[in-house]
Length: 102
Ligand SMILES: [Zn+2]
Image (tube, rainbow, N blue to C red; front, side, top):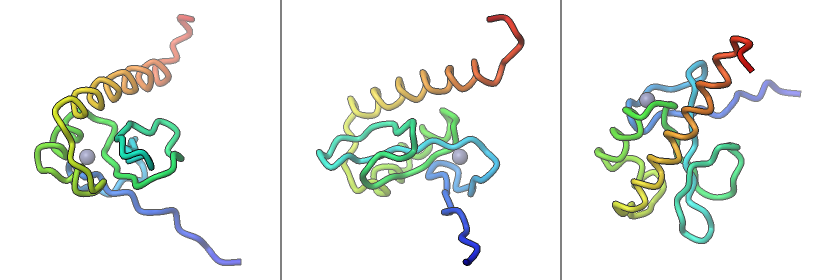
């Protein structure tokens, strides 16, 4: 046996290491596409940001997301990832707000 520590996931936007905070994974697929990895288990090189748009924008602006994924992010990729992240955040928000208004 051995106590295996969970992998350290550092936000490429704000640089905070997240274990408590909600975090999202981006992945570069074997095909070379970049996608939001909602499951966190997709194959490929991954990079993390907090589940916040500010962190995503920061990671893009500082080119940390593209360098972590070793890929050139085009404008259209960024737009697509942002839209996916926005949708994902909405889903998270809905799940967190279980007020019984189903
Ligand atoms: Zn962050």
